[in-house]
Length: 98
Image (cartoon, rainbow, N blue to C red; front, side, top):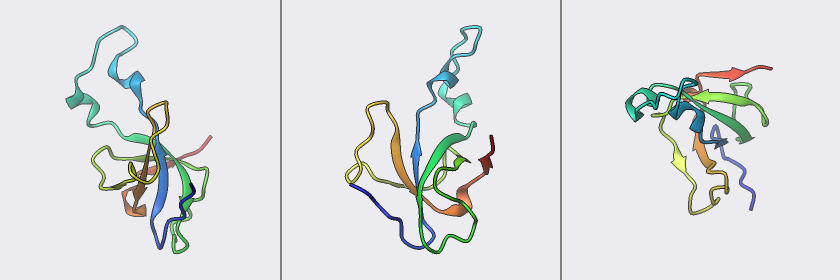
């Protein structure tokens, strides 16, 4: 099933970042530390009124505590633990550039 966001909404796919739970030296970080780091998400589709210049395929940073609309009942989560969210453009921290 495909979903085209309406208005300014942006459909993103957030992948879990399990690498953040353990440092390279093997120290396990508690959730309170992980809470302050942003999430990396892939933009899948943008609404027609998106004036921010965000395009499909972009990789963005969003706060972990950003408000969003979960789509668990509409678009099932992937086997790798990724989840789909509808977000507003004003929650985007930045766009990652290769």
